[in-house]
Length: 456
Image (tube, rainbow, N blue to C red; front, side, top):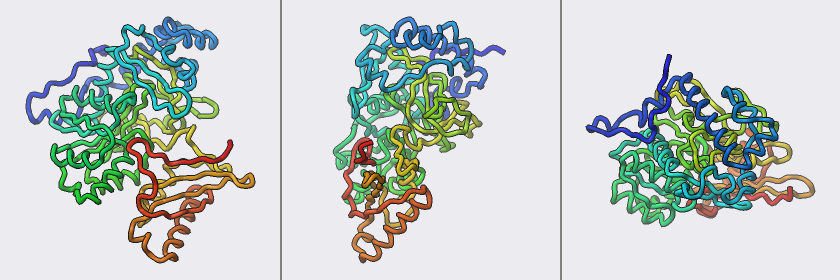
């Protein structure tokens, strides 16, 4: 059987009538490729990528030579496991442009990570990279239920951060109307949503809840807005937080995944029909799950660290990039009809994971417990310290006005309940400090959930 593997993937549908607005796919041929065709395409593009980086990137030539691998050694997809990993530290060591596979005269855009630790990671895009990114982001938006009649309220940050421009280009490629409002000035955001008739909200999940708080204070009723879908990412969030967002913002909340090193937003998206994992676009990225300690590749369904190899990037292709994000892969058929594997909701990061008295703890696990307790707000801070060689964990959590103004014994009972739930669910003891509403600092970007005071 023959498959057409290389249709130009920057083409996109032209909508002829209103019924086409509800199209299920942006690029049906690629989104529904049979597994055999998808893997054949992956191998072809992987071989071309390895050849490119071996020829153009000294870092990869050296690392492949040390591993005894040449481009001709890659004969099957299984050979991918023989290739060396790439890490964020490798990107920092190559700062700013040493990992670029294309000459600077072909690089039309440069983004960089926030650089919260060490030097930022720098990524470059050729014109073709930008076109592919716009295609994939348009595909992502359609997967979330968007169509060209939508008005997309884009509250991801614009600038070196990839979120704002990534969503923006995808919305324009789709043909939707995009409001490039970026983050901040929440009162203005609420006014724009009301006046402009925004139908889709894109931002971090924590910022959406901050919007809900500000709306309540300003007397803005989300039930009277036209919002119907929220596409939330850039930080881990729990199923319980999804329910909280959907209730407070009166929309369907869907998870999006991306990272600047790989492309930006649009690497994977939860589908509107299934809401059971995020389709990772395997015609552009090959995912693996590894044991974060040993580096061993794990079978489908097992949780571990996500590793991604880019197979269409020109500016800065990455071989087996260790994302440090903890998830699992699911290759089972999806109700939406897309054949691309799904990653499960991120449960944290291998490098953000807290080890407290020998127990592995992710902030999202504690969040799931807190959101399920009546009277507790979804805003919390974990403070880890070490006293007399013993790790301590303090959980600061906001409670609503009614609970906070109640009797001391009521607050004490609530704190003990939370401590017990965390102990029972995670096996780690903690002290809970209940604080008044809005006492924990808000963020318009990624929420800061952990303060680790230990000298580890």
